[in-house]
Length: 287
Length: 273
Image 1 (cartoon, rainbow over the protein chains, first blue to last red):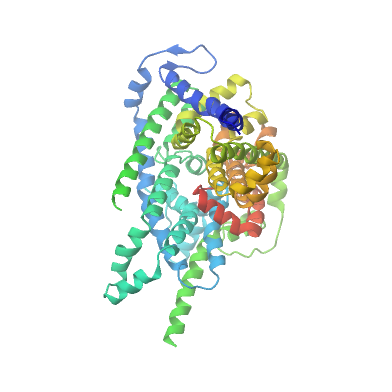
Image 2: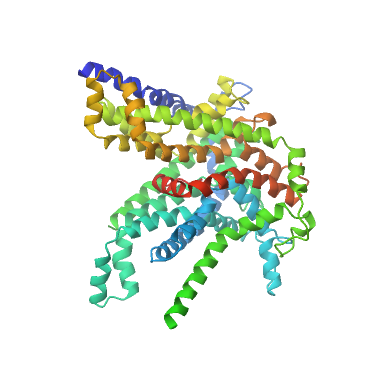
């Protein structure tokens, strides 16, 4: 093919993405830059209001509360996710029988819809009739208000989310562990390094790329937190489980404040973007 | 002897671990087929089995219609992602057109954009197109995806050049090469992109909640969600759980047969379901 023909065929084949990009990435981003300066309920005409949306956001206690809630979720979810996934991967990496069965079992919640998992755990967590509390009181422990206590509700959701996703990260870590050459451990053993030392000086550096991926992925997943509080608590008690995405959803589709919801989305997206960039920097430097 | 005991202990702990992931689902299956008043008892086995919860679901909400909607939407999106993403992936991998480097970087960049920024403008776009409460709103925004393009591009780069050159000499057009030569040689990539796309679409809730209000157009996860938080289940746990079970069953069945592909596909993508 000559280069002119190649250009034509190339762009022709790439055209679906070009159209898709213009409609569903390019336009929305440009339009969001426009929306943030307006007040709009979709029905009546759009009204230019300058920086009022941003001013409102800075003084909006619910936005900061939802941001804090989301961060609380992340602070529990990410470390728990990494630790449990690493332990499970470490166990699966030994020569064990039934590897396929165990891997499939840990992975099952990953493939099942978040809606199903959330409905199931809402029942498990129920204070009076939930399976967890029934079990606790059966062995003589007090019933816990998993989803109805201001301090406890978000950690409960974070534990559930970890349970749901940990299988995926286990498989990622397992692939990383399987890539470490055995002789490294044998050499360390001969030099008298303890198991703990081997873990921190061989395993951790070797799986650092996977660790980076796991942390970034679970951060993004955490920032997207929506369906879990939406189904389980609706943001209650006292907005202690209101996530940012749930708050954006409410502003847009319960109160029809499109301009303000777009502003929330815009500011939050910038925050996510910077957090992920920082994570990348920090974790890449550890190499 | 000590070694055997140690090994048995290890497997016991492993089994308990596996059980902590499986038991909630096992409990859920039983909860949907036992009488309502026995759901709140610790005992798993019911006094008798009943399908009352399932009958109630089918009586209260058009769940089979929602199932059909989900099948239509997920299949349409999966088919179109396979076609379009492989087209773009092929162009990026095997055709040296000017600007492809730029296009590739653009795709990488759009993958990094958090969806929170595009959510509201996308909704307004759908409103302006008059697509709310139509299949278009559910299908069109998912018809191409960057993940599929990148995966196909990577896979197509490793297909032997001879294969493509031979076809070009025979006078095959590029589209024909893609579908006749490349596709049959890229089954693993197709399976991966297919599974990921189908799963994410099947499980998507936020977008349907936003663009669909009419009950007969709702997808299955959306309908189950609204059923669980709304009043029509009359807070009967068994009925809500049964609706969730109906949503989970198709995925569980497919997963049981193809679990290897699921795990490997999702591990390559790092996406969650």
